[in-house]
Structures are given as structure tokens and as C-alpha cells.
Length: 96
Image (cartoon, rainbow, N blue to C red; front, side, top):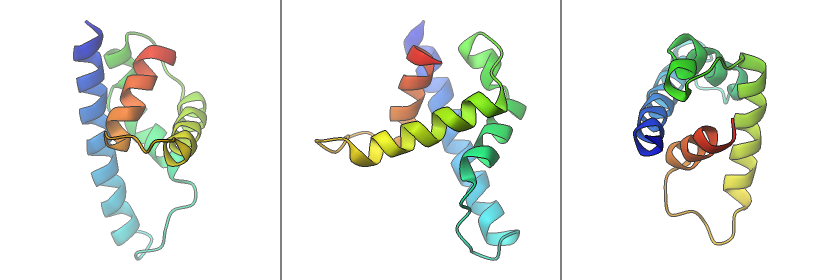
């Protein structure tokens, strides 16, 4: 069911976000990671996003998708009422 997949991908993206925050703090000494989509995609692929969406997902494709989704999320009018992870999970399940 698509709703179950969206919830599972949302949970994975939220976990990814938390892990990346730790990475930025501990490895980058609090510096913003300009290449965060690559880090997120590697983490998500390593943690089973392909199984959640039902097909293989490459890190390159996912990084591009995450960057694009972030840009669209930030520019959306009106501002989305859901968090970025939920917004992007819904798009991943529908489009990726």
C-alpha cells in the first residue's frame, strides 16, 4: 500500500536527517554540509530505501532527487504544512 511505503520512507528520511545532523556536528565541526544530498542518499540506500520503494535506487539518482525536492519544498507556495521528510517521501514513492 502506498501509504505504508510513504510512512516507511518518511521514517527513513527522518532517521537520515538525525544521523546527518550528528555527522555535521562530529565530523564537520558544525559546518553546514553543502553536499548533504550525496550523504543522505548514501545513507538511505545503505539503510534499505530500495526495499521500501520496491526497486533498486542508485545513490546518484536519489541525491539528484533529494536536492530537487528540497528546492521545490523551499519554493512551494503556499508553504507545505508537512515536514520536508514527509513531503519528499510522498514524492519518492510517487515519482522515483
